Image (cartoon, rainbow, N blue to C red; front, side):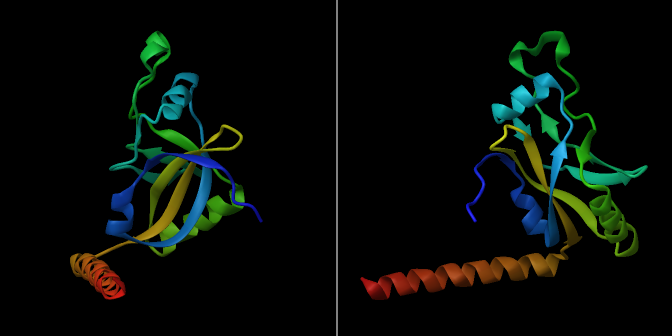
Length: 155
């Protein structure tokens, strides 16, 4: 199966540092005309953003889409809450994760797929403790050190 073509617009590196990722979902996002133009220019920030389930809908908060320069009066609030589009069965599953297991919904990345639609990669995540973060850093440093030594031996 061929991998789909997609243009990465924004990523959330801190999410993988602060959380253990349990499951990942692809969600559509409801945007206005000037917002999608700004997204295509790559003016999106996912830092400090999170998703909540309200009245059977998933809403993302804290996602910053900068106003479009030529948007004039059609521009909207850059930090406004935006609705995510998922199948009802996926939403029910996410409700179970967040209410019963106490997990969090965190956006990992935003991209534009081959159809020109903006999509958001949403993760079900469990927060890391400080010692978990240190352990992850130590493992990464050890792997980097091993790679460096292997490279020296080959030369």
